[in-house]
Amino acid sequence: MSDVPSRVHVTPAAREWIERLQAAHGPLMFHQSGGCCDGSAPMCYQRGEFRVGGQDVLLGTVAGDTPVWIGAAQFEYWRHTEVTIDVVPGRGAGMSLEAPEGVRFIVRSRVFSDAEAAALERAGEPLHGDGWDAA
Image 1: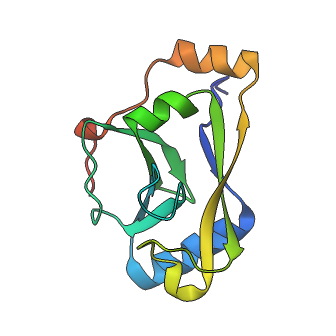
Image 2: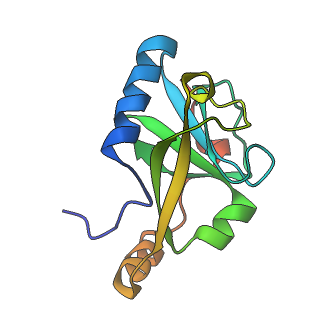
């Protein structure tokens, strides 16, 4: 088992919503907003609907194979933070797929321990969008 912690997780409630949205829309992806859409909410899109590029960093995958991206500049601020996607009642102001459903995805976070941060540093840089296939 690897000692490298995952940078991103989902709560059971968020996983349920992701599965519901996948059933309705097909494969999904998240992009952690840097403030333009609904503050800093994780935005959920049909996979490939949001174009990722070299300035996007892959935090990891959740709920099976759903990728979670973040802009490189924001990643530098969040580099030492574990992200957990959760869902709460309410409607966000963005274009995220869950918006019409009366719920919204949010991010909960915690700072990695020194040991976790060291393991992530040893693992090297995460993948950037220019090396990812959206299929």
